[in-house]
Image (cartoon, rainbow, N blue to C red; front, side, top):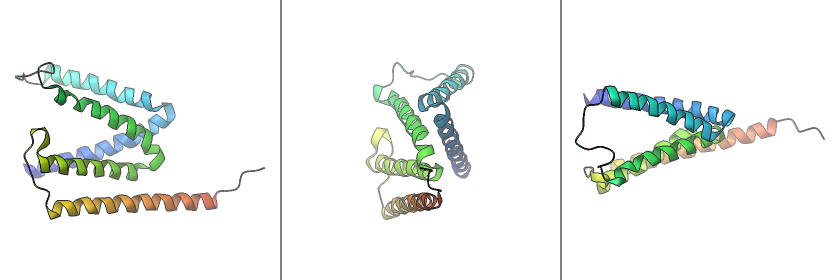
Length: 161
């Protein structure tokens, strides 16, 4: 069951990357806020229908849970606006690895300190190595982007005067 869940999460990561690339392109064509608005509007409609027809009743609702738990919704807005703005400017790979790096760093902190009521999982050498390797991946991807951009500028024809 754990392997299946990991595969589902990997698939959702792939879908998130595709969504970010598509929204980044859309944002560069119609505007960052318009692209984010479309995503949140469709997400609201799908979530409402899912909750209305399929979600079982819960002991708490959005008005009775601690306020800090509702704050997570605002983080989605920040992510969406940043990724739609950044994707066309730094590329899909650099933006995706940057997001994953931030997610890994925060997840290691959450696990290590047990923030938000999560189980404490210590920050051992293997987890630190994963963070270092991901930082190396980000540096290599960024470096390949800057080299490609420099080569493109060298081969670009000079503008007419």
